[in-house]
Image (tube, rainbow, N blue to C red; front, side, top):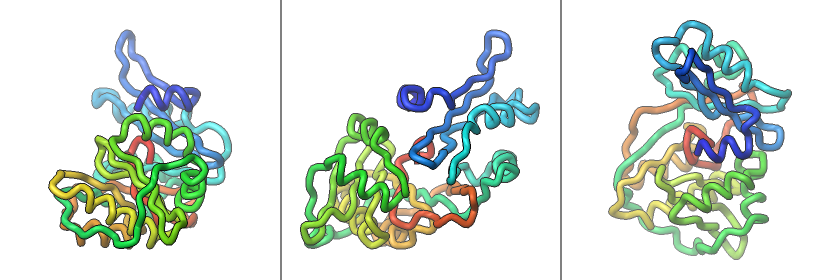
Length: 240
């Protein structure tokens, strides 16, 4: 993950040193006109001393139409730091885990991914191209699938060491079908899937599959009135 962030977005990655100790680091990515804050970690001994604010200043480069991050909901200090920059919490990120038990989707056809199809689905679900991230996912995931419905690409899904995700569809119903199809193939495996609370159709599929809630995260957006995601499940807090 670190190699991927440094390769494609190294100008937004920084560390803070105290003598010969690294006491904090940060990373952010830019995809088209969207800036996503991937990480901010500060050693506990140095928290509350402006280190995190300085790291955010360094990573906050350029002018973008959209800014996004995901935090652990139990971190009010970080959430306040981001809120002062206009990144406001709009929905929980629901982590669900367990051994899924759900039927496959009849008529949904799995095929091998191609970049043009992935780009089309990313633009529909995220609003930006994720080509460079698919390079990482293709190399680290055990399975990548494009799902076709009536001979048209409807969604894609990955199975990775993080669990099921990302999942992205041309609309909410298509993404939910892809999640159901992927969960059906994971019967007997302990998996986790991270879904924004606004992706109601996907949350419903995960619950019908018998997955249970764990500690939630929080999705923060700027501007806060942008359309929150409804047709995707995340890969990780690192890459959304």
